[in-house]
Image (tube, rainbow, N blue to C red; front, side, top):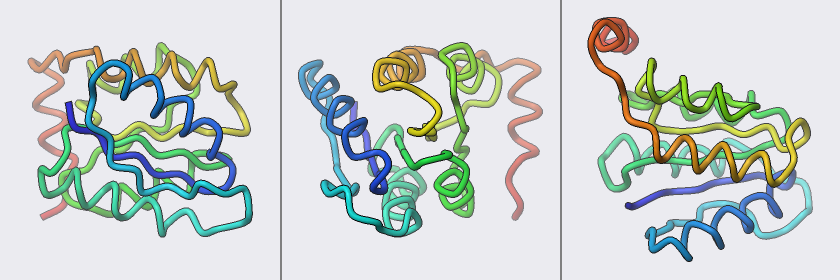
Length: 143
């Protein structure tokens, strides 16, 4: 699977743990995130991830910032991107099953690194249910 990941300074260690796991699983990772802890602007890392998802260069995106909100708002400006802010594994599963989310946004200041990794694993291994949910998802995008 091809996955793009982006993070600001709040998510550097989370990103590394997630990337290490995903690469060990054989996934191809494009890292747009900072590798430093100094203050940076989350949109600078969100937009390249979202662009890759939008243009079909990757299957999924993962974005991480302090609250998860700003980076989620940024990715959701792109057509065809459905970024879901997730803080527990069950929300990550529902984001895939019901919303066909293709980007997971993680709030580093409100989850542990292990929780974040569990959410990513659940997100990437959960299929979209379709059915009544497809009708709703089809109404999300603005043309």
